Length: 186
Image (tube, rainbow, N blue to C red; front, side, top):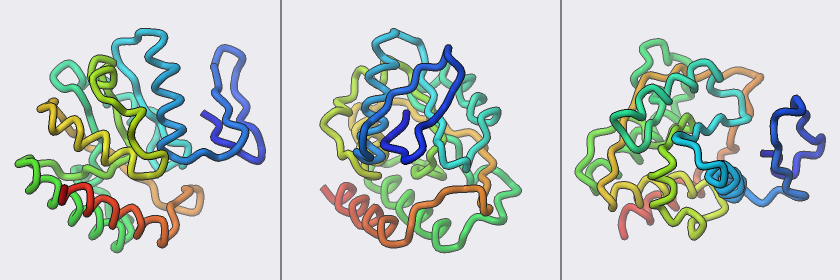
């Protein structure tokens, strides 16, 4: 998925890239990707972020957990070596995860991870096209899955936080956090 990159993403010829002529947003990029993937009728769909925070090899391990779940998240909090996780992000993610756990009577460790895998059946059941084009897309998708009593599993995922990782700036992160609060209070 190339969401309006100034330098177009290049890939081997066998890889199909969807290109938005301009950046339509994080959620819009996922919607386009999931729609294209679902057209091919796969059993599973794996999201690999282009921000370089999670390795492809670790992300692929999420797929093995889908036999017992509808959605699998890679949890930074279950990975014992996650010491370089920025404190403000770690605290915010933990508080928002606790709020969702309380609201939906769940017990998860990291509901704001970008490492995600889905069964096609789960994505076909969720009306994700109606969700936000912003970062709130992920939270809307999970909350909708909770309302439908979908099974969510987590597995340890090592994050990377160094100069090679693209990161959300503080103001959009704050906007995301406030949006998550409002979603959970509905």
